[in-house]
Amino acid sequence: MAGKDIRGVIVPILTPLNSDESVDTSSMRRLVNYLLDNGAHGIWVSGTTGEFANLTNKQRLISVETVVDEVAGRVPIIGNISCPSTQLSLELALAVQEMALDGIAVTPPYYYNNAQDELLDHYRYIGDRSGLPLWVYNIPPTVKTIVEPNTIATLAAEGAVVGVKDSSGSGEPFAQLNVLCEQGNLNLLRFLGTVSRITTSTALGADGVIPAIANLAASASARGWEAGEAGDMETVKECNAKLIAASKIAQLAKGGGPNAAAFS
Image (cartoon, rainbow, N blue to C red; front, side):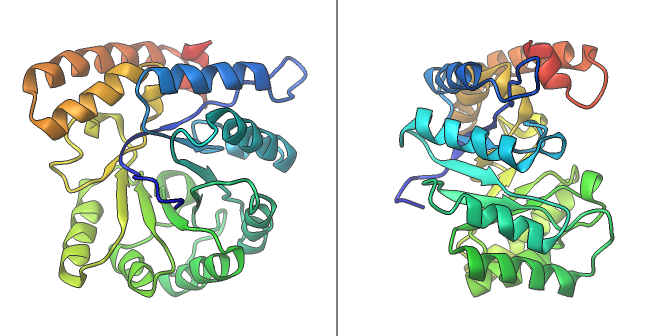
C-alpha cells in the first residue's frame, strides 16, 4: 500500500458527467481538491456513490486515471473494480494494475447468489492474478450476498485481502469480524460505510469510514472522525449537527444517486 497510513475518512467520490455522459474530468479534479483541502484522508473511486454500475469500463478507467493523477500521491486511493462476475472484475483489475492505486476493492459477483466457498475462490482468484492489495467490499443490500465474518477472516489470515469496507447496514457482522481479527491477530484494515458511524468508528474497532455524505460535508466528516478518535466531544457534536443537516439535503433527492443530485 505504498507505505501510506490508511485511516480516517476515505471519501467515495462522485463521478461528474457531462451532458453527453462522458466523464467531466475538470469537475472531478476540482472535487478531488475540494475533498483534500477539507481534510479527506483518502479517496475511494468508482464506488457505489460514484454510480459505477451505471458506467462503462471506459468511464470507470477515466475516472480512476483522473483521480490518481490529481491526487498525485497526497492520500491513499482505493479503486472499486466490482463487476457482475469474477472474470469481469479481474479484467478491470488488470486494467488498473499500472495506475498507482493503493488498493482495489471488489464485491461478491452479483445477480446470482453465491455460497461462502465460492466467495473464497472469487477473492483468491482476483488477488492472486491482479497482484494488487485487495479489499472486500461487503454490501449485501445491492449484491444480495453477504461476505460472512469467518470468510473475511479466512481471507485475511491467508493474506488474500488487506481490508474490508462494511456496508452491510448491521453492526453485528462487523463486531464479529473484530473479534475474529483480535483472536487471530489478523492484519486487516476495517472500514465502515455508513454516515452514522463517522464519529464513533474508532470506538467500534474501525480504522475509519467511507461515507457518501463526505462529498457534501468533507470538513465535518474529517473533523468529526478526528474528534471522535481524540475524544473531543464538543467538536463531535458540532460536526454531527452539520452531517445531519447535509444528510437531510441529500434525502430530498429521489432516485439512485441522491448525493450526486444534492451536490449538483
